[in-house]
Length: 440
Image 1 (tube, rainbow, N blue to C red):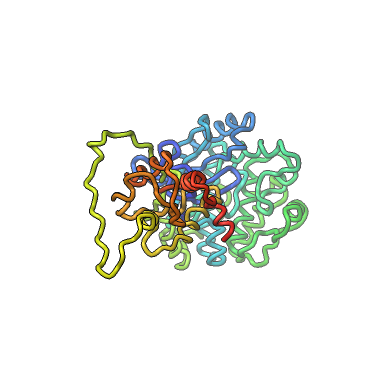
Image 2 (image 1 turned 90 degrees about the vertical axis):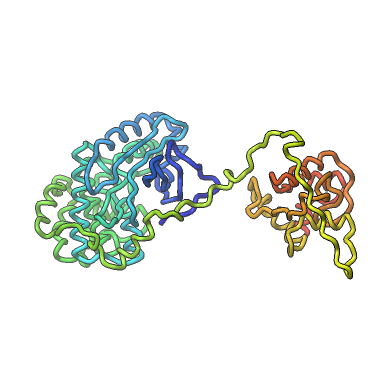
């Protein structure tokens, strides 16, 4: 499911405008983005520490070049990439559907008819990947997406670059324990049969809700992958023999994707939008981009751009007349009127302190919910320097710096920040705003 962007996320990557977060993996963060022509794409931004490793970019460039040659109905095609920029990234076709891991966790194992379609689709996807000279190396439930027109294999072709980086760290093993092959677990040479072993493990998960080697610490899973037989008692008999062959310990004993497709034969029908049962198809709608998909822009993009100074005659506007006090209501003191003009209607001064100070303590550049000045800010009370502390209504000493703050607020360019208030208080010899919050 698409999640909102975070304040630290970029707005664009290359020519693609980011719309939301899709997930995070070992290589980096994945975003839903929009191409210049309005097409949805998935953009993976590579982690900074990986991009900075010697030789990583060259390996990544080779893998992306090979992945561009992969074609097929059951893979997410590579559409763009930048391997030499400040932060490398890869863009693939967006697949509107959940991962197999998400779907099984939410809805339970797949029925046998859906399982057969999944089996054939993933075998065809691996066939296309291997035909391009690419080995996936990290096929697992989270790297399989379920769409209305069939499954998709993602994250193929870029695992070798990460694997070479991981192997430089003592004791690190590339892959997901429980889904990688025995030869991967033992650090041996890895080829296309390794992906077939992972395919058998993924299909076991789809059929039972659990991998063939159970759960537990990574060390225990690795030991079982190498030395124990898979647990397949709950796998439907119709597909169990094929899965058993995929999970053979010896790579030479495993079938190829072409062998699997031939043996599945007429048992697989035409893939239609209802290849998944209803609870799964209902969930697919949550992954289709809509006009509401673009998330709120990151906070950094909300900051006001510097505004060039203009001539006074260009920015002068008539000042609205201050409202006359009611007959039975005494006119407010000037200092109180100035303080009230800084506080939203119906909000106490103490809550205003909290709204400004809390984001500042959290280290944010701007307040999460900035206080907006009332229209009266354009009137006489804001025409010159602040004459009263905005929270206590105590008189402030005249300070030319505060005139800049007042003019900025009056122009509607920005909300006064905590540092600006702190400067005013320091000039007046008052307690800082943060100190007031700490005392509360």
